[in-house]
Image (cartoon, rainbow, N blue to C red; front, side):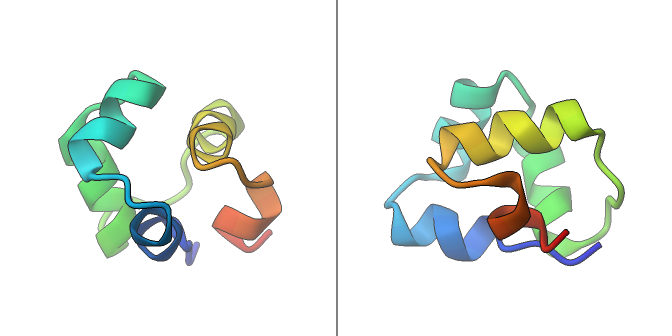
Length: 63
């Protein structure tokens, strides 16, 4: 699943560690999602990330 996490995160001026702290996820997990080495996050995880980025899940994860 392709996503726009890095693009949106950088537009918002949010560092990976800050996004990790905001979502309760690890920085490593967010890094893997951005690179595409981890795929198919749960809807709960997608919602946490989208909420932290002030976007809809569909905008962040192209679903």
